[in-house]
Length: 517
Image 1: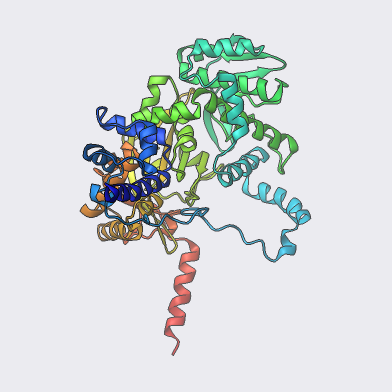
Image 2: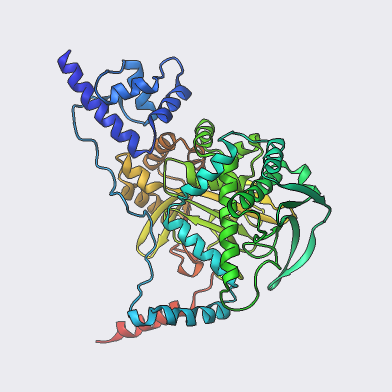
């Protein structure tokens, strides 16, 4: 018995380290066990006793825990007191290097204040767009963690989940909001160099009137989001009316008429952009409160399409997924044709695909978010990608969905995870896995079936992370992607990707130097 307890103590230490490394609470681990085997699943208190070495799991329970974490039961009993080392904390997996602000005198506050308006004017970036870029960077640096907004939303909604349209109507009335309906159809609007279908969904009129397009009555998912965002404005800002309308089509952050067209960055641009972000984040937290939504995702194995059961838009499901998951390394894109990135989140610092706010000239066509824009690759799909960024090779899996906004414009939503940190955390050599997949793709012109050993490792990881679409992606070829098509690492370059001038000059220089005696 003492020997058994001694082995039980080591088992508990390893189980606790493995659970924390995968970001699971005791309650969530218990739920994962229930999903696999209700009869053998342990309670939270019993799991706690196992981790503290006070209880030894039965063979059946040990097998269940091993299945959750895709381990051999013998691993828990090998009497190794030290679990496998976890990756260093605080690092940013796949992080992009920051701008070196040297020489320092060129990056003084006064010079930046003078240079930024010139930069915006030369690139055709509006003040509102630039403000959204600043907020995006703040969001990524803070790991999407805004506890004050979460608490405010949970206080209003009391963590009820899911909330229906009628419940949101009552919440709006409770906070002094009156809903007035109007009728408007989509119209063609000019957004810089293109025409888009644009439609006003709803807007806030101080101090407490929400004007909503009647077409929302037949679209409960969008209606719920708009109501939640207007409730947020009333709660957070007292309903002062300094908030952008909810409009479909046009530039990032609003309708074609929504942002200032002048060069430079006006205080009003920052105010509206920040408030739009606050209200959007609050709305997501109200509709999908952290703890119950995290449990829902665990039950559904993170399938985006499951949000339809709750009348939540795919965008809300994907955005909240990046926040509530115990796994921290997520990214999210919302792209309109031909490659406009309307929304981006890169919690793991994934290099940004080439698609900007006003035009697109050099997209890599193998990013899933761009491949699906033309509508020729199905309505949804999962893809494993090796991103070549300089000398770095990074491994990602994403799930993309082709949708239409309320005005009928097609766009693609894509959510994904960085696979390397999870592989390393679970004792798998991520560099070897990435190298094997990359080598196979290079051998087969940029896309190939995933090698068997790599597929087995990723299949096990899909079960550990409990993300179904990682497993789905294994049935399709992996692809090499790159930040820009003119940096294509494939043996044969992608179609419509002519070499850049810089590449040609570099080649000539190397030829000349190579001829020197």
